[in-house]
Length: 282
Image (cartoon, rainbow, N blue to C red):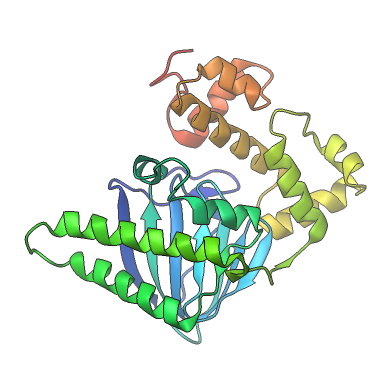
């Protein structure tokens, strides 16, 4: 785990996917962080407001929270009641491996971004069936029966298929009643869609008609990041994705807005703990 000045890359995933049952009963301090895998949280109970990329969601029992790989997030928890949930870590490679044509298993995560709503409210009937599947998968973590790993994979694939079917048939299940600063969310969207462009403080200040210092203060309040660190890390993570597809590291750095390779290489090493050329040549 690499701790940065403003943020933390959190967690690790050695399997294709992993399920945890967690119940926090005593105070624990979370920081703004991100993962290099997708995260799905099935919220059971507690008094929790979850912040993702400038949006704040008040969670209700049996909400499903979808956090895309690389998205900055943090829970704010009132520990007067236990924070109970099931958490899936899911590798993007696993979702890609089991997708077929237009039937993509990461569709629910794509829709969470497109619909600008990271929380899903399911009907009681569908929620009940899917929750039973979650508990079955969790039970298999402690089972030594024949082909338990295979059964777990099959059960998880079925869970994802049913969840994605619900998203397709009823897009309104994406809960959009988030609290957020409209300007900051617009700015976050613009930054992520334009990583190759000029994203200096002066340029963004002029584009969004905000004073530099007010803009920087509000951005830090809403995301936990300085604007400089946010843009830097988003560019590095985007470049990493390009490099993993086989793009030369030098080209990936330019595509993601870096003016020279040495600056990119140093920042990449500091954030990810390895050089961009460690696996793929320049």
